[in-house]
Figure 1 (cartoon, rainbow, N blue to C red):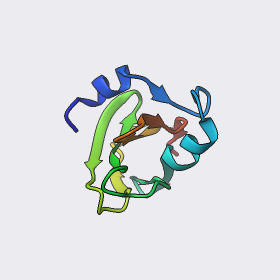
Figure 2: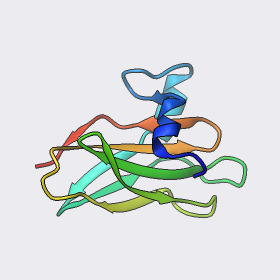
Figure 3: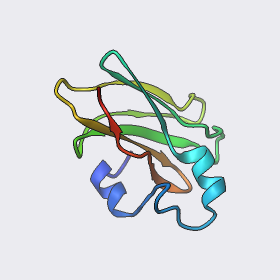
Figure 4: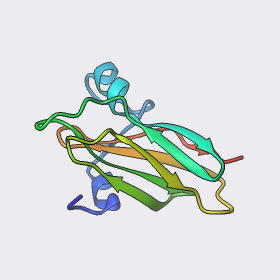
Length: 111
């Protein structure tokens, strides 16, 4: 990914609450969707993957700390299944687009 997750976040994170410009177009395809099943966070990003515009990586933060990530090439599907550490209270998913930086889901409680 080049930069660490903290360095990417420092550049600015787009969220539903803080969408920036052209919010509908960016959020619809950039924000990761989280599904929690059996100790795993399944992430999917509804973004197309092309040689000039793709999702470079996704990661999850558990209780504010980055714990798992997956990188992609433009030929991959932007989906991942990442382990959630035992005792986690909430997770937030992030996606990084090569053209539009970092996007975040809302914090999701872990049952």
